[in-house]
Image (tube, rainbow, N blue to C red; front, side):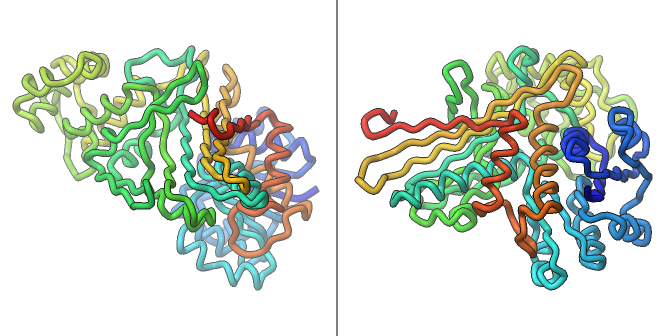
Length: 434
């Protein structure tokens, strides 16, 4: 039995605690929101909980020192503070966040301290790396050449819970999702780098046929080009990682962007101001603008309450924050609704005999009604498995690492499958490829 510290008691912590307690590890959940930690302990009374402000270096340090491994599920800005304490006391660390230059710079110190700092072990990033690297290595091991790698991932309402015009719901604050829609995107196509400006991001859509019964739309993520190096797929002429949504989402959010609702700049909203009046401030010719939009877009704006004088804008310090309040109100999951996670990799390669191949690796997982969401399971469970593999000595790599080597992804994928998180693979050859 090992002592494992979990920083943060948000929605992904439950599945993580469930997995680790089944393996008889002692868990301490520390959070600045002690009621959230206590709520987890209702289901798992054997765990310990405590209140913690991670900016309190002494308190954080004493907790890290008392445990064998720390899992940081707090905002990424605080990961370096946590890592510094893990280095100080020679303790392992895990995050589900993207590896930052600041964390990566700690690699040699982690090696010297004989500890593992594993990042990017959630869903995306995380499970996507595991499944991608397994198949990339299989293609290379059999003498094949990878020509194209396209990866899509999204968290969505399950089909029966997809009951609003946007085809989307939020289980947590929408700000991160909205801010991502402002980013430029780069990807590789026909061997050339393609750059999409943030203004056009939601107009750069692809139809993605996940299954015979599930067709979605996708738009590119911020930086796909770097994955040619990260994954070692230097022969690939196409490298794209993107986000999945139900059809129609992007047109609606593009309109919201054009109407100024995604503007993050300071904008004091006080007094009784209707949403329609706010839109007219940004676009005085609102009526003409709406006449140019599709019926679906106008109906969605109406459904959100943006086009009448009876719905007031909440007080906020920016338009995007005010819009977040509205979306949380209108697009929240109810207790009897479920979410869904969809992840699909597409690998186009040429095998050693010169025959084209198309491999697809697909995960479709729905959450539980009144239980854990699919997103919570697919973020919390990989991190929990990785923690177990580190403290039991299965993962022995030291330093600041990513889950991209065979000794890491093989046991992780096996354990995920045992938890019902399974990627189904298909292979087409030659003329069978669409």
